[in-house]
Length: 101
Length: 499
Image (cartoon, rainbow over all chains, first blue to last red; front, side):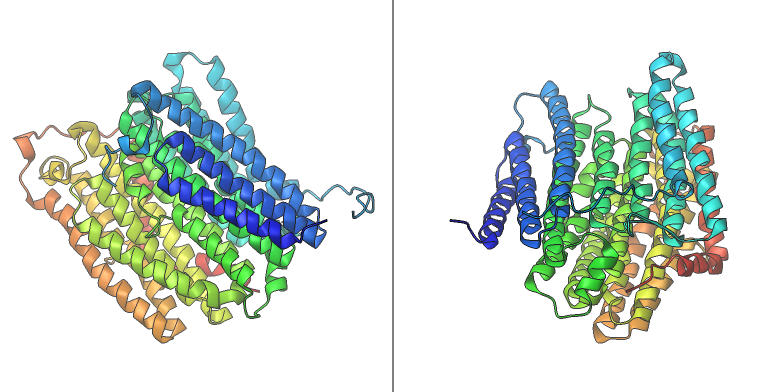
Protein backbone atom coordinates (compact mmCIF):
# COMPACT_ATOMS: atom_id res chain seq x y z
CA UNK A 1 0.00 0.00 0.00
CA UNK A 2 1.37 3.39 -0.86
CA UNK A 3 0.36 6.59 0.84
CA UNK A 4 -0.73 9.75 -0.90
CA UNK A 5 1.85 12.57 -0.87
CA UNK A 6 -0.37 14.83 1.18
CA UNK A 7 0.06 12.53 4.21
CA UNK A 8 3.77 13.26 4.18
CA UNK A 9 3.09 16.97 3.86
CA UNK A 10 0.77 16.85 6.87
CA UNK A 11 3.37 14.92 8.86
CA UNK A 12 5.99 17.52 7.93
CA UNK A 13 3.66 20.34 8.96
CA UNK A 14 3.03 18.61 12.30
CA UNK A 15 6.75 18.10 12.94
CA UNK A 16 7.44 21.72 11.98
CA UNK A 17 4.77 22.92 14.43
CA UNK A 18 6.14 20.72 17.22
CA UNK A 19 9.60 22.18 16.61
CA UNK A 20 8.37 25.78 16.51
CA UNK A 21 6.25 25.43 19.65
CA UNK A 22 9.06 23.61 21.42
CA UNK A 23 11.54 26.34 20.57
CA UNK A 24 9.24 28.96 22.05
CA UNK A 25 8.18 26.94 25.13
CA UNK A 26 11.21 24.94 26.28
CA UNK A 27 13.84 26.69 28.41
CA UNK A 28 16.78 24.32 28.08
CA UNK A 29 19.05 25.61 25.34
CA UNK A 30 20.04 22.12 24.16
CA UNK A 31 16.40 21.12 23.80
CA UNK A 32 15.83 24.36 21.88
CA UNK A 33 18.59 23.24 19.48
CA UNK A 34 16.82 19.93 18.99
CA UNK A 35 13.60 21.79 18.20
CA UNK A 36 15.43 23.75 15.48
CA UNK A 37 16.59 20.44 14.02
CA UNK A 38 12.99 19.19 14.03
CA UNK A 39 11.92 22.27 12.07
CA UNK A 40 14.72 21.87 9.51
CA UNK A 41 13.97 18.18 9.05
CA UNK A 42 10.30 18.98 8.51
CA UNK A 43 11.49 21.26 5.71
CA UNK A 44 13.55 18.38 4.28
CA UNK A 45 10.57 16.03 4.38
CA UNK A 46 8.43 18.62 2.60
CA UNK A 47 11.08 19.09 -0.08
CA UNK A 48 11.51 15.38 -0.71
CA UNK A 49 7.75 14.84 -0.85
CA UNK A 50 7.30 17.62 -3.37
CA UNK A 51 10.24 16.31 -5.39
CA UNK A 52 8.46 12.93 -5.65
CA UNK A 53 5.08 14.48 -6.40
CA UNK A 54 6.48 16.79 -9.09
CA UNK A 55 8.90 14.17 -10.38
CA UNK A 56 11.68 16.75 -10.09
CA UNK A 57 15.07 15.75 -8.70
CA UNK A 58 15.83 19.40 -7.86
CA UNK A 59 13.86 19.23 -4.64
CA UNK A 60 16.03 16.43 -3.35
CA UNK A 61 19.17 18.36 -4.25
CA UNK A 62 17.93 21.21 -2.05
CA UNK A 63 17.86 18.82 0.93
CA UNK A 64 21.63 18.43 0.78
CA UNK A 65 22.13 22.17 1.07
CA UNK A 66 19.77 22.32 4.05
CA UNK A 67 21.56 19.43 5.77
CA UNK A 68 25.02 20.92 5.31
CA UNK A 69 23.99 24.38 6.47
CA UNK A 70 22.15 22.92 9.47
CA UNK A 71 25.30 21.07 10.48
CA UNK A 72 27.36 24.26 10.23
CA UNK A 73 24.78 26.12 12.29
CA UNK A 74 24.79 23.52 15.06
CA UNK A 75 28.58 23.66 15.28
CA UNK A 76 28.47 27.41 15.87
CA UNK A 77 25.56 27.09 18.31
CA UNK A 78 27.32 24.45 20.39
CA UNK A 79 30.42 26.66 20.43
CA UNK A 80 28.37 29.50 21.87
CA UNK A 81 26.87 27.15 24.51
CA UNK A 82 30.32 25.92 25.51
CA UNK A 83 31.45 29.53 25.96
CA UNK A 84 28.47 30.09 28.27
CA UNK A 85 28.97 26.83 30.22
CA UNK A 86 32.54 27.86 30.97
CA UNK A 87 31.26 30.94 32.74
CA UNK A 88 28.30 29.52 34.63
CA UNK A 89 26.69 26.22 35.63
CA UNK A 90 23.67 25.05 33.63
CA UNK A 91 22.30 26.54 30.47
CA UNK A 92 18.67 27.47 30.66
CA UNK A 93 17.45 30.41 28.67
CA UNK A 94 15.89 31.98 31.79
CA UNK A 95 19.31 32.44 33.37
CA UNK A 96 20.25 34.77 30.55
CA UNK A 97 18.70 37.98 31.70
CA UNK A 98 21.52 40.51 31.93
CA UNK A 99 20.15 42.33 28.91
CA UNK A 100 16.69 43.70 29.32
CA UNK A 101 15.00 42.79 26.06
CA UNK B 1 11.04 6.03 -11.06
CA UNK B 2 12.09 8.65 -13.61
CA UNK B 3 15.25 7.84 -15.46
CA UNK B 4 18.33 9.71 -14.28
CA UNK B 5 20.47 8.94 -17.33
CA UNK B 6 18.23 10.85 -19.73
CA UNK B 7 20.33 14.00 -20.07
CA UNK B 8 24.10 13.97 -20.43
CA UNK B 9 25.90 16.24 -17.94
CA UNK B 10 26.58 19.65 -19.32
CA UNK B 11 28.96 21.95 -17.45
CA UNK B 12 27.21 25.21 -16.54
CA UNK B 13 28.43 28.38 -18.17
CA UNK B 14 30.68 30.39 -15.88
CA UNK B 15 31.38 34.07 -16.54
CA UNK B 16 34.57 34.64 -14.56
CA UNK B 17 34.55 38.38 -15.21
CA UNK B 18 31.12 38.65 -13.59
CA UNK B 19 32.29 36.58 -10.63
CA UNK B 20 35.52 38.57 -10.18
CA UNK B 21 34.43 40.45 -7.01
CA UNK B 22 33.49 37.18 -5.29
CA UNK B 23 36.65 35.44 -6.48
CA UNK B 24 38.92 38.25 -5.24
CA UNK B 25 37.09 38.40 -1.91
CA UNK B 26 37.36 34.62 -1.45
CA UNK B 27 41.07 34.76 -2.27
CA UNK B 28 41.60 37.56 0.24
CA UNK B 29 39.74 35.86 3.05
CA UNK B 30 41.70 32.64 2.55
CA UNK B 31 44.93 34.68 2.48
CA UNK B 32 43.88 36.40 5.72
CA UNK B 33 43.31 33.04 7.38
CA UNK B 34 46.70 31.68 6.28
CA UNK B 35 48.71 34.84 6.99
CA UNK B 36 47.17 35.00 10.46
CA UNK B 37 48.79 31.62 11.26
CA UNK B 38 52.30 32.83 10.47
CA UNK B 39 52.24 36.30 12.00
CA UNK B 40 53.47 36.93 15.56
CA UNK B 41 50.96 38.03 18.16
CA UNK B 42 52.34 41.59 18.36
CA UNK B 43 52.16 42.14 14.59
CA UNK B 44 48.55 41.06 14.05
CA UNK B 45 47.67 44.52 12.73
CA UNK B 46 49.10 43.32 9.39
CA UNK B 47 46.17 40.91 9.06
CA UNK B 48 43.59 43.67 9.41
CA UNK B 49 45.52 45.81 6.90
CA UNK B 50 45.58 42.92 4.44
CA UNK B 51 41.82 42.50 4.88
CA UNK B 52 41.25 46.23 4.29
CA UNK B 53 43.38 46.31 1.13
CA UNK B 54 41.65 43.15 -0.05
CA UNK B 55 38.22 44.70 0.39
CA UNK B 56 39.23 47.70 -1.70
CA UNK B 57 40.75 45.32 -4.29
CA UNK B 58 37.45 43.46 -4.64
CA UNK B 59 35.74 46.81 -5.12
CA UNK B 60 37.75 47.35 -8.33
CA UNK B 61 36.05 44.61 -10.42
CA UNK B 62 32.69 45.97 -9.24
CA UNK B 63 33.63 49.35 -10.70
CA UNK B 64 34.83 47.77 -13.95
CA UNK B 65 31.63 45.75 -14.29
CA UNK B 66 29.57 48.89 -13.66
CA UNK B 67 31.48 50.77 -16.39
CA UNK B 68 31.03 47.83 -18.75
CA UNK B 69 27.30 47.92 -18.04
CA UNK B 70 26.22 44.56 -19.48
CA UNK B 71 23.81 42.41 -17.51
CA UNK B 72 25.35 38.98 -17.05
CA UNK B 73 23.29 35.96 -16.11
CA UNK B 74 24.44 32.50 -15.06
CA UNK B 75 22.93 29.14 -14.01
CA UNK B 76 19.67 29.68 -15.94
CA UNK B 77 19.01 33.00 -14.25
CA UNK B 78 19.86 31.96 -10.68
CA UNK B 79 22.88 34.27 -10.43
CA UNK B 80 22.68 37.65 -12.13
CA UNK B 81 25.13 40.56 -12.20
CA UNK B 82 23.17 43.68 -13.11
CA UNK B 83 23.07 47.28 -11.88
CA UNK B 84 21.02 46.28 -8.84
CA UNK B 85 23.63 43.70 -7.83
CA UNK B 86 26.56 46.04 -8.47
CA UNK B 87 25.12 48.93 -6.44
CA UNK B 88 24.62 46.66 -3.44
CA UNK B 89 27.97 44.92 -3.86
CA UNK B 90 29.62 48.33 -3.70
CA UNK B 91 27.51 49.28 -0.66
CA UNK B 92 28.44 46.09 1.22
CA UNK B 93 32.14 46.32 0.37
CA UNK B 94 32.41 49.99 1.36
CA UNK B 95 30.46 49.56 4.59
CA UNK B 96 32.56 46.48 5.32
CA UNK B 97 35.67 48.60 4.87
CA UNK B 98 34.31 51.27 7.22
CA UNK B 99 33.48 48.60 9.82
CA UNK B 100 37.01 47.24 9.48
CA UNK B 101 38.41 50.75 10.08
CA UNK B 102 36.18 51.10 13.15
CA UNK B 103 37.30 47.69 14.44
CA UNK B 104 41.04 48.27 14.18
CA UNK B 105 41.61 50.00 17.52
CA UNK B 106 38.66 48.40 19.32
CA UNK B 107 39.91 44.89 18.57
CA UNK B 108 43.54 45.88 19.19
CA UNK B 109 42.80 47.14 22.70
CA UNK B 110 40.28 44.54 23.79
CA UNK B 111 40.86 40.94 24.70
CA UNK B 112 40.07 39.66 21.22
CA UNK B 113 41.21 37.24 18.55
CA UNK B 114 42.25 39.69 15.84
CA UNK B 115 43.11 37.54 12.83
CA UNK B 116 39.99 35.42 13.00
CA UNK B 117 37.90 38.56 13.45
CA UNK B 118 38.94 39.90 10.03
CA UNK B 119 38.39 36.48 8.50
CA UNK B 120 34.85 36.17 9.83
CA UNK B 121 33.98 39.74 8.85
CA UNK B 122 35.13 39.01 5.28
CA UNK B 123 33.17 35.74 5.18
CA UNK B 124 30.02 37.52 6.23
CA UNK B 125 30.65 40.19 3.58
CA UNK B 126 31.11 37.48 0.95
CA UNK B 127 27.64 36.21 1.85
CA UNK B 128 26.23 39.72 1.35
CA UNK B 129 28.00 40.16 -2.00
CA UNK B 130 26.54 36.83 -3.16
CA UNK B 131 23.12 37.89 -1.87
CA UNK B 132 23.13 40.95 -4.17
CA UNK B 133 23.35 38.65 -7.20
CA UNK B 134 21.11 35.82 -5.98
CA UNK B 135 17.93 35.40 -8.03
CA UNK B 136 17.03 31.96 -6.81
CA UNK B 137 15.51 30.67 -3.56
CA UNK B 138 18.39 28.30 -2.86
CA UNK B 139 21.09 30.88 -3.62
CA UNK B 140 19.32 33.36 -1.36
CA UNK B 141 19.23 30.76 1.42
CA UNK B 142 22.91 29.87 1.09
CA UNK B 143 23.93 33.54 0.91
CA UNK B 144 21.82 34.30 4.00
CA UNK B 145 23.49 31.55 6.00
CA UNK B 146 26.95 32.54 4.76
CA UNK B 147 26.39 36.05 6.06
CA UNK B 148 24.61 35.02 9.28
CA UNK B 149 26.79 32.22 10.66
CA UNK B 150 29.97 34.33 10.96
CA UNK B 151 27.82 37.11 12.41
CA UNK B 152 26.64 34.82 15.25
CA UNK B 153 30.25 34.24 16.16
CA UNK B 154 31.19 37.92 15.88
CA UNK B 155 28.33 38.86 18.24
CA UNK B 156 29.89 36.62 20.89
CA UNK B 157 33.43 37.74 20.19
CA UNK B 158 34.08 38.92 23.79
CA UNK B 159 33.76 35.33 24.88
CA UNK B 160 34.73 35.93 28.53
CA UNK B 161 31.95 38.48 28.92
CA UNK B 162 28.55 37.08 29.88
CA UNK B 163 26.69 39.87 28.13
CA UNK B 164 28.43 39.12 24.86
CA UNK B 165 27.63 35.39 25.31
CA UNK B 166 24.01 36.26 25.87
CA UNK B 167 23.97 38.52 22.82
CA UNK B 168 25.38 35.73 20.67
CA UNK B 169 22.95 33.09 21.96
CA UNK B 170 19.87 35.26 21.49
CA UNK B 171 20.98 36.27 18.00
CA UNK B 172 21.77 32.66 17.17
CA UNK B 173 18.48 31.14 18.40
CA UNK B 174 16.32 33.73 16.65
CA UNK B 175 18.52 33.57 13.57
CA UNK B 176 18.11 29.82 13.14
CA UNK B 177 14.41 30.04 13.96
CA UNK B 178 13.97 32.63 11.22
CA UNK B 179 16.00 30.54 8.74
CA UNK B 180 13.85 27.50 9.49
CA UNK B 181 10.61 29.46 9.04
CA UNK B 182 11.90 30.98 5.81
CA UNK B 183 13.03 27.58 4.49
CA UNK B 184 9.64 26.07 5.20
CA UNK B 185 8.08 28.87 3.18
CA UNK B 186 10.57 28.23 0.37
CA UNK B 187 9.74 24.51 0.35
CA UNK B 188 6.04 25.35 -0.01
CA UNK B 189 6.71 27.76 -2.87
CA UNK B 190 8.89 25.11 -4.53
CA UNK B 191 6.04 22.63 -4.15
CA UNK B 192 3.54 24.99 -5.74
CA UNK B 193 5.73 26.07 -8.66
CA UNK B 194 8.23 23.25 -9.17
CA UNK B 195 11.17 25.66 -9.51
CA UNK B 196 13.44 27.76 -7.33
CA UNK B 197 14.52 30.41 -9.86
CA UNK B 198 12.65 33.64 -9.08
CA UNK B 199 11.99 34.48 -12.73
CA UNK B 200 10.34 31.08 -13.32
CA UNK B 201 8.39 31.37 -10.07
CA UNK B 202 7.00 34.70 -11.26
CA UNK B 203 6.02 33.08 -14.57
CA UNK B 204 4.35 30.12 -12.83
CA UNK B 205 2.45 32.25 -10.33
CA UNK B 206 1.55 35.11 -12.66
CA UNK B 207 -1.12 37.43 -11.33
CA UNK B 208 -3.55 34.62 -10.57
CA UNK B 209 -5.51 34.42 -7.36
CA UNK B 210 -3.24 32.81 -4.80
CA UNK B 211 -3.48 29.18 -3.91
CA UNK B 212 -3.42 28.71 -0.12
CA UNK B 213 -0.11 26.86 -0.46
CA UNK B 214 1.56 29.82 -2.20
CA UNK B 215 0.04 32.32 0.20
CA UNK B 216 1.33 30.34 3.18
CA UNK B 217 4.76 30.02 1.56
CA UNK B 218 5.04 33.76 0.94
CA UNK B 219 3.81 34.45 4.48
CA UNK B 220 6.50 32.22 6.02
CA UNK B 221 9.25 33.69 3.83
CA UNK B 222 8.32 37.27 4.74
CA UNK B 223 8.12 36.38 8.44
CA UNK B 224 11.56 34.76 8.24
CA UNK B 225 13.05 37.94 6.77
CA UNK B 226 11.12 40.10 9.24
CA UNK B 227 13.37 38.58 11.92
CA UNK B 228 16.47 39.43 9.88
CA UNK B 229 15.53 43.08 9.39
CA UNK B 230 14.27 43.27 13.01
CA UNK B 231 10.69 44.22 12.17
CA UNK B 232 8.24 44.36 15.08
CA UNK B 233 6.95 41.90 16.43
CA UNK B 234 10.09 39.94 15.52
CA UNK B 235 12.56 42.55 16.79
CA UNK B 236 13.16 41.58 20.43
CA UNK B 237 16.58 40.07 19.82
CA UNK B 238 17.96 43.25 18.28
CA UNK B 239 18.42 45.60 21.26
CA UNK B 240 19.96 42.87 23.44
CA UNK B 241 22.29 41.66 20.73
CA UNK B 242 23.29 45.21 19.81
CA UNK B 243 24.08 46.07 23.44
CA UNK B 244 26.00 42.89 24.23
CA UNK B 245 28.03 42.53 21.04
CA UNK B 246 31.30 44.43 20.55
CA UNK B 247 30.49 47.92 19.17
CA UNK B 248 31.95 47.52 15.63
CA UNK B 249 29.98 44.29 15.28
CA UNK B 250 26.84 46.10 16.39
CA UNK B 251 27.42 48.70 13.69
CA UNK B 252 27.97 45.90 11.17
CA UNK B 253 24.76 44.08 12.16
CA UNK B 254 22.60 47.17 12.22
CA UNK B 255 23.77 48.34 8.79
CA UNK B 256 25.16 45.60 6.54
CA UNK B 257 23.24 42.63 7.89
CA UNK B 258 19.97 44.54 7.83
CA UNK B 259 20.66 45.81 4.31
CA UNK B 260 21.26 42.23 3.17
CA UNK B 261 17.85 41.25 4.54
CA UNK B 262 16.25 44.08 2.58
CA UNK B 263 18.13 43.13 -0.59
CA UNK B 264 16.72 39.62 -0.31
CA UNK B 265 13.22 41.01 0.28
CA UNK B 266 13.51 43.27 -2.79
CA UNK B 267 14.55 40.32 -4.94
CA UNK B 268 11.86 37.99 -3.60
CA UNK B 269 8.97 40.42 -3.60
CA UNK B 270 9.58 42.39 -6.79
CA UNK B 271 11.02 39.56 -8.91
CA UNK B 272 9.41 36.40 -7.58
CA UNK B 273 6.10 37.22 -5.95
CA UNK B 274 5.12 40.49 -7.61
CA UNK B 275 1.81 39.22 -8.98
CA UNK B 276 0.77 37.99 -5.54
CA UNK B 277 0.51 41.46 -4.02
CA UNK B 278 -2.79 40.67 -2.32
CA UNK B 279 -0.75 38.35 -0.05
CA UNK B 280 2.25 40.45 0.82
CA UNK B 281 0.97 44.04 0.67
CA UNK B 282 -1.28 43.79 3.78
CA UNK B 283 1.44 41.86 5.60
CA UNK B 284 4.01 44.59 4.97
CA UNK B 285 1.46 47.27 5.87
CA UNK B 286 0.99 45.80 9.35
CA UNK B 287 4.73 45.19 9.79
CA UNK B 288 5.61 48.74 8.73
CA UNK B 289 3.09 50.41 11.07
CA UNK B 290 4.08 48.25 14.06
CA UNK B 291 7.82 48.56 13.40
CA UNK B 292 7.84 52.35 13.05
CA UNK B 293 5.55 52.99 16.01
CA UNK B 294 6.99 50.51 18.52
CA UNK B 295 10.59 51.28 17.54
CA UNK B 296 10.15 55.01 18.02
CA UNK B 297 8.05 54.84 21.21
CA UNK B 298 10.47 52.49 22.96
CA UNK B 299 13.46 54.54 21.77
CA UNK B 300 11.99 57.53 23.64
CA UNK B 301 12.56 55.80 26.97
CA UNK B 302 16.15 54.67 26.44
CA UNK B 303 19.00 56.04 28.57
CA UNK B 304 21.79 54.05 26.91
CA UNK B 305 23.02 55.39 23.57
CA UNK B 306 23.58 51.92 22.05
CA UNK B 307 20.06 50.79 22.96
CA UNK B 308 18.72 54.09 21.64
CA UNK B 309 20.48 53.48 18.31
CA UNK B 310 19.21 49.88 18.38
CA UNK B 311 15.58 50.96 18.68
CA UNK B 312 16.18 53.77 16.22
CA UNK B 313 17.46 51.17 13.74
CA UNK B 314 14.28 49.15 14.36
CA UNK B 315 12.24 52.26 13.56
CA UNK B 316 14.35 52.98 10.47
CA UNK B 317 13.61 49.44 9.24
CA UNK B 318 9.95 50.37 9.63
CA UNK B 319 10.35 53.32 7.24
CA UNK B 320 12.05 51.00 4.76
CA UNK B 321 9.10 48.59 4.93
CA UNK B 322 6.68 51.34 3.86
CA UNK B 323 7.50 51.11 0.10
CA UNK B 324 6.91 47.34 0.20
CA UNK B 325 3.41 47.94 1.56
CA UNK B 326 2.49 50.29 -1.31
CA UNK B 327 4.55 48.93 -4.22
CA UNK B 328 2.24 46.21 -5.51
CA UNK B 329 -0.46 48.16 -7.34
CA UNK B 330 1.36 48.71 -10.66
CA UNK B 331 4.75 48.38 -12.34
CA UNK B 332 5.26 52.10 -11.88
CA UNK B 333 4.52 51.93 -8.14
CA UNK B 334 6.94 49.01 -7.89
CA UNK B 335 9.65 51.11 -9.55
CA UNK B 336 9.17 54.03 -7.17
CA UNK B 337 9.07 51.68 -4.21
CA UNK B 338 12.32 50.02 -5.21
CA UNK B 339 14.07 53.35 -5.71
CA UNK B 340 12.85 54.47 -2.28
CA UNK B 341 14.22 51.38 -0.53
CA UNK B 342 17.54 51.44 -2.40
CA UNK B 343 18.13 55.15 -1.72
CA UNK B 344 17.13 54.74 1.94
CA UNK B 345 19.52 51.78 2.39
CA UNK B 346 22.47 53.69 0.91
CA UNK B 347 21.89 56.76 3.05
CA UNK B 348 21.02 54.80 6.19
CA UNK B 349 24.32 52.90 5.93
CA UNK B 350 26.34 56.15 5.90
CA UNK B 351 24.53 57.89 8.75
CA UNK B 352 24.18 54.88 11.06
CA UNK B 353 27.82 53.80 10.65
CA UNK B 354 28.83 57.39 11.38
CA UNK B 355 26.75 57.53 14.56
CA UNK B 356 28.30 54.27 15.77
CA UNK B 357 31.81 55.55 14.97
CA UNK B 358 31.15 58.56 17.23
CA UNK B 359 29.75 56.33 20.01
CA UNK B 360 32.92 54.23 19.82
CA UNK B 361 35.21 57.25 19.86
CA UNK B 362 33.49 58.75 22.90
CA UNK B 363 33.28 55.38 24.71
CA UNK B 364 37.07 55.04 24.41
CA UNK B 365 37.39 57.81 26.98
CA UNK B 366 34.19 57.80 29.01
CA UNK B 367 33.95 53.97 29.14
CA UNK B 368 30.19 54.45 29.27
CA UNK B 369 27.25 54.06 26.96
CA UNK B 370 24.88 56.23 28.99
CA UNK B 371 23.45 59.23 27.15
CA UNK B 372 24.19 61.37 30.26
CA UNK B 373 27.92 60.76 29.69
CA UNK B 374 27.58 62.89 26.54
CA UNK B 375 26.83 65.95 28.71
CA UNK B 376 28.77 69.02 27.58
CA UNK B 377 30.61 67.11 24.87
CA UNK B 378 30.79 70.34 22.88
CA UNK B 379 33.03 72.05 25.45
CA UNK B 380 35.84 69.53 25.09
CA UNK B 381 35.24 67.75 21.76
CA UNK B 382 33.57 70.25 19.42
CA UNK B 383 34.45 68.40 16.22
CA UNK B 384 32.89 65.12 17.38
CA UNK B 385 29.83 67.00 18.65
CA UNK B 386 29.23 68.66 15.29
CA UNK B 387 29.61 65.33 13.48
CA UNK B 388 27.29 63.51 15.90
CA UNK B 389 24.73 66.29 15.50
CA UNK B 390 24.91 65.85 11.74
CA UNK B 391 24.40 62.09 12.04
CA UNK B 392 21.47 62.20 14.48
CA UNK B 393 19.72 65.03 12.57
CA UNK B 394 20.26 63.06 9.38
CA UNK B 395 18.69 60.00 11.05
CA UNK B 396 15.81 62.24 12.12
CA UNK B 397 15.42 63.43 8.53
CA UNK B 398 16.26 67.13 8.83
CA UNK B 399 17.62 68.94 5.72
CA UNK B 400 20.29 69.49 4.44
CA UNK B 401 21.69 66.17 5.69
CA UNK B 402 21.19 62.97 3.66
CA UNK B 403 18.39 61.51 5.76
CA UNK B 404 15.73 64.02 4.68
CA UNK B 405 16.08 62.93 1.09
CA UNK B 406 15.69 59.26 2.01
CA UNK B 407 12.52 60.05 3.99
CA UNK B 408 11.24 62.22 1.14
CA UNK B 409 11.48 59.23 -1.21
CA UNK B 410 9.60 57.01 1.26
CA UNK B 411 6.74 59.54 1.41
CA UNK B 412 6.85 59.95 -2.36
CA UNK B 413 6.41 56.22 -2.92
CA UNK B 414 3.39 56.17 -0.58
CA UNK B 415 1.76 59.28 -2.06
CA UNK B 416 2.40 58.16 -5.66
CA UNK B 417 0.67 54.85 -4.97
CA UNK B 418 -2.34 56.99 -4.06
CA UNK B 419 -4.59 54.39 -2.45
CA UNK B 420 -6.29 55.08 0.88
CA UNK B 421 -4.15 52.50 2.66
CA UNK B 422 -0.96 54.02 1.23
CA UNK B 423 -1.94 57.52 2.34
CA UNK B 424 -2.82 56.25 5.82
CA UNK B 425 0.64 54.69 5.96
CA UNK B 426 2.22 58.00 4.90
CA UNK B 427 0.40 59.72 7.77
CA UNK B 428 1.68 57.12 10.27
CA UNK B 429 5.21 57.59 8.93
CA UNK B 430 4.86 61.36 9.28
CA UNK B 431 3.69 61.16 12.91
CA UNK B 432 6.55 58.79 13.63
CA UNK B 433 9.13 61.15 12.16
CA UNK B 434 7.95 63.77 14.65
CA UNK B 435 8.20 61.34 17.57
CA UNK B 436 11.68 60.35 16.44
CA UNK B 437 12.76 63.97 16.44
CA UNK B 438 12.33 64.05 20.24
CA UNK B 439 14.92 61.43 21.08
CA UNK B 440 17.37 62.41 18.35
CA UNK B 441 17.19 66.03 19.50
CA UNK B 442 17.55 64.76 23.09
CA UNK B 443 21.02 63.44 22.24
CA UNK B 444 21.95 66.75 20.60
CA UNK B 445 20.64 68.74 23.61
CA UNK B 446 22.74 66.61 25.97
CA UNK B 447 25.90 67.32 23.95
CA UNK B 448 25.38 71.06 23.42
CA UNK B 449 23.59 72.28 26.54
CA UNK B 450 24.13 70.00 29.53
CA UNK B 451 27.02 70.30 32.04
CA UNK B 452 29.98 67.94 31.81
CA UNK B 453 29.50 65.02 34.25
CA UNK B 454 32.32 65.01 36.85
CA UNK B 455 33.77 68.09 35.11
CA UNK B 456 36.31 65.89 33.31
CA UNK B 457 37.34 67.83 30.21
CA UNK B 458 40.32 65.81 28.97
CA UNK B 459 40.16 66.01 25.19
CA UNK B 460 39.23 62.85 23.28
CA UNK B 461 41.98 61.35 21.12
CA UNK B 462 40.67 60.09 17.79
CA UNK B 463 42.79 57.23 16.40
CA UNK B 464 43.53 57.57 12.66
CA UNK B 465 41.45 54.52 11.61
CA UNK B 466 38.37 55.75 13.46
CA UNK B 467 39.00 59.23 12.07
CA UNK B 468 39.02 57.83 8.55
CA UNK B 469 35.75 55.98 9.20
CA UNK B 470 34.20 59.20 10.53
CA UNK B 471 35.48 61.14 7.51
CA UNK B 472 34.06 58.69 4.95
CA UNK B 473 30.63 58.56 6.58
CA UNK B 474 30.38 62.31 7.21
CA UNK B 475 31.35 63.17 3.62
CA UNK B 476 28.81 60.64 2.33
CA UNK B 477 25.99 62.04 4.48
CA UNK B 478 26.74 65.63 3.49
CA UNK B 479 27.24 64.82 -0.21
CA UNK B 480 23.93 62.98 -0.42
CA UNK B 481 22.15 65.80 1.36
CA UNK B 482 23.52 68.46 -0.99
CA UNK B 483 23.44 66.51 -4.29
CA UNK B 484 20.52 64.14 -3.84
CA UNK B 485 19.83 63.88 -7.60
CA UNK B 486 22.95 61.77 -8.13
CA UNK B 487 21.68 59.22 -5.64
CA UNK B 488 18.17 59.23 -7.00
CA UNK B 489 19.67 58.40 -10.40
CA UNK B 490 21.57 55.50 -8.82
CA UNK B 491 18.35 54.26 -7.24
CA UNK B 492 16.49 54.48 -10.58
CA UNK B 493 19.27 52.64 -12.43
CA UNK B 494 19.37 49.86 -9.90
CA UNK B 495 15.72 48.85 -10.10
CA UNK B 496 14.97 45.22 -10.75
CA UNK B 497 12.83 44.45 -13.77
CA UNK B 498 9.35 43.65 -12.46
CA UNK B 499 7.63 40.68 -14.04
